[in-house]
Length: 152
Image (cartoon, rainbow, N blue to C red; front, top):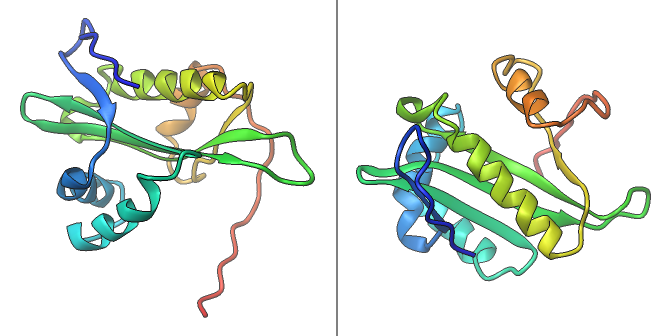
């Protein structure tokens, strides 16, 4: 999918990410508190980009990547099939210019193209600025939970 409609706020094009975007994706991930080097991102992209059940798109401005969104299909026993937005980062210089809205709308269109009528997203309780954003796009709180991890 490609979408090249400039918004009223800033001229951007949305496109599928490529391995060449690793540096820009890494820089934006760091802005959100997930520091990674471009090499590590490139290795992850090698797994994600060819997968038909993953979507990784970038919003590109004349100065580079203004934002990115990663989503994927979840099939689980206990819940209906859905598309889960796993990462959404907008460059600080482009926030509040509807870049995030455009990326989420793109992901919603992708979900519908797969006949999946549900899109989910998790937002850290500490990211209070993102909660009104998602509510404004029509998302509602489905549950709260604690995330556990165990390094192996």
